[in-house]
Image (cartoon, rainbow, N blue to C red; front, side, top):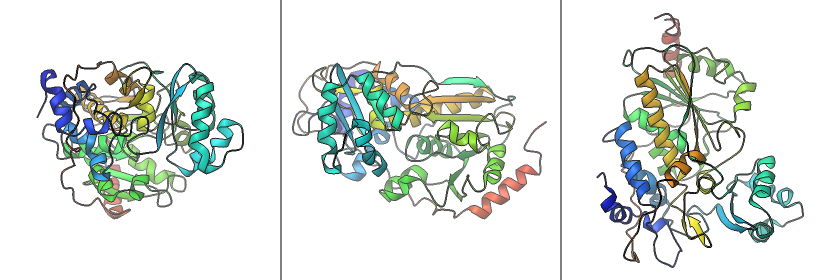
Length: 403
């Protein structure tokens, strides 16, 4: 169902999003219900009747699978914290062991691992948001200052020649991982594209190590190709030359070093190259996850004095939606473009929608809406031979150049 502004609050609660916003023992928060209205509108533009689920499911589905709920200034997933700072609020995500290992360097003093959150909370109170972000960015930590990012549209630039829409079935090269990028390519697969998911055998998509149901949900229907770009860059380059759409979320310097970035790979006519970053072109190597990126964009709930997370890593599914729409629109124009989409900028755009008056208290919200049953995604590398044959067939035609 596509909610209107009038029933947005009811839809937000009915699909369990209220259970993901607010204090764990307090009243659920539906003030950001306008986000759901806009997300429904975007999804309808990308793929009416998408089998991946409706917009509410995309926002609440991971939490439904995990059984988690709102935790106030602790993220639903548990890895991020929203902390009061000297002049505002800041966020940090410690989802990787390496992130926790960097806490002493970030605080510039010895800290026991078990004391990391206490030490970070104490430090935030005396640090300015700017200092917090500068230190974290320098170390590669996912940090944010509340509302640091302004809203904006995807950045589009020309690359190569255009082509008429609908000349051939789409081939999508998916070099992304985790949530935003895989959701984008899952939506493209729903729309009929052939998606090749590229993973290194040594470092596959980190989502494989989590709840298998979430990985299946994001990656069902894609071909799995196991190839290490650092050892076999030429094989990956062949896929990128053949693809009609490339989706990647790597640090630009990493792909550039391997000769696999958009400026190094010859563009197929009409090719659309989508780059997903945490904080955009001005900070291409700055790390971000869905919760801290949402804070950077100001997409939070609560009050200026008591600020809390909005939903579950909400910048991730919103970016996946916006990325799919940007690709769809580019293809309709004939492609030949590079599109840059940033998690924090997407979050800021949705934050700019404002809040709604939630009216009555919502003390007992429904649980989060679960994703539809999804068959298993392909096992790692299961489709290697099929992908190799497909690429050889496309290469034999000259990669479509001059057609």
